[in-house]
Image 1 (cartoon, rainbow, N blue to C red):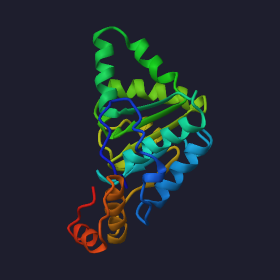
Image 2 (cartoon, helix red, strand yellow):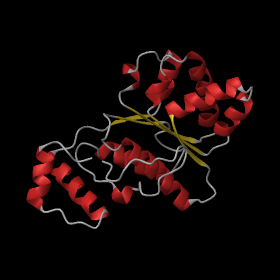
Image 3 (cartoon, helix red, strand yellow):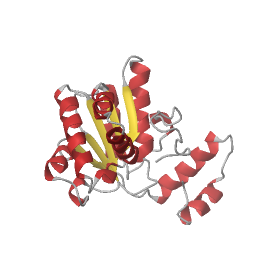
Length: 213
């Protein structure tokens, strides 16, 4: 689960989001392990990797952690993080300025594509069409693709069937709400990131109120 604020720079990796700063518990073990496998061998296993769960459970943290780990191993790797919402806005702008070719080239030239909140491409037929072709080209070239969403592909309304099939083509890893113990660990680790010690009783009180983000 994320223990630092969300990044504000669009399209860039947040270097604070790393595997070392992620608190692992029963609710996110599968997603965490799969993310590590992807970071160690991009394009080999779990391609695409699709992580889903409610907001605030650490999906974006893991997405950036994958990118940062890959970049640390191979500085020449081209890693692109993008929110699906931003993807849609850029695509619309490329249509308006007659630069669709340049838009597609930006995404087709990467080694690793990290797409956050992919549910935002639902009910956008032309965007899905373009994304479908970008996905196919990257996948056929064994480039790693990772998605996050608030729900499973089959539960995303307004998604073309062939797009849904692509999203489900790799590993689906869910992230559930953390246990109280994990929440306590998150709170204390967050405190450490700010140089503060959070006593057990204080952390348990905060966790009991459902506050850990």
